[in-house]
Image (cartoon, rainbow, N blue to C red; front, side):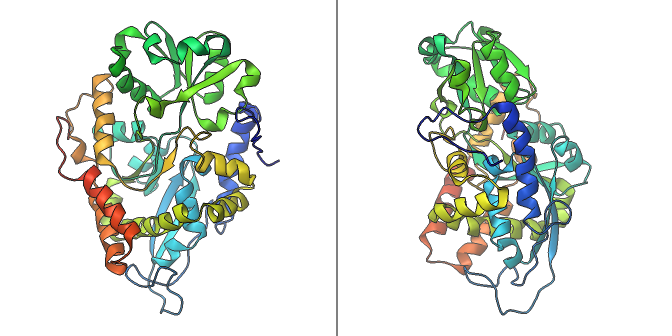
Length: 392
């Protein structure tokens, strides 16, 4: 059954446990549509990395293909829609790249560090943790920002809608959640120290966050939007997206096996060139994107539009391949302050923005008058260059 979104009441949808099962279907359907094979299809095609116009490289001589194996999480439609769209529109093919997608629900960074996959697009916390602790992992681009709601029991929503009232409260997140460190940073503005003035509870799933808050075992929970739209039926309420605490905070990043990144640098640059080109279309023609993603994942278009593009229903989730080193540095600092990492490894040792810069420069060389790509360049310079910080 397709997931349906009731637009009359933006807090209604199927139960989280049912949806958790359906998420496992989403990626397999989308990747099967990419051409089968090892959960994800190969991008055949023609134009090399410098060839072809915006519409592709039809009519050019076939060039040898680079290859990458990329792991995606089962929830790819919400957190990683751009790469699915890029593949299905043939942009990897046009860049002369074959991408093999694998669905990996757990252990992605273990597989990445061991070289069993070339790259993954996953949560920022494990990526930074593995990189900082000397694993064979390098972060190199962005995926998403935002995308978490604060929730509470309805009878306490009015009180807890103000973060100034969170001191002394119990907060529940999933293990290694981005939201923990966003909240820790955001509560500083209210004079609340996360480590000493709140109790933090970790659980293994968003479904369990709902249960813990519903039973009164925690005062507040922090929930992905995919799980949030029927919680009013459980006497729970969405308070606000946590972008209200830290605007446009970074979430999932693209991370590579460090050895593969060196040996296959050209392939990774092509991987990003394809995403940058698809990103323009992704933002310019949202109706077409929604239609394609809905077809590829067997979801209702209203549901896809909500979790990918609707700021209110997606908790201000945004898609962007820019590495955003500036906001990543803020997040890294939170990990150090919270005692997850000791800060001895500078972020620059395992975060390489040069691949995205090279890819963007290549695209600008093809389309020098394109204002969209010019604006991406301005953003890149602002968020990735001439930065300073204790842990950089």
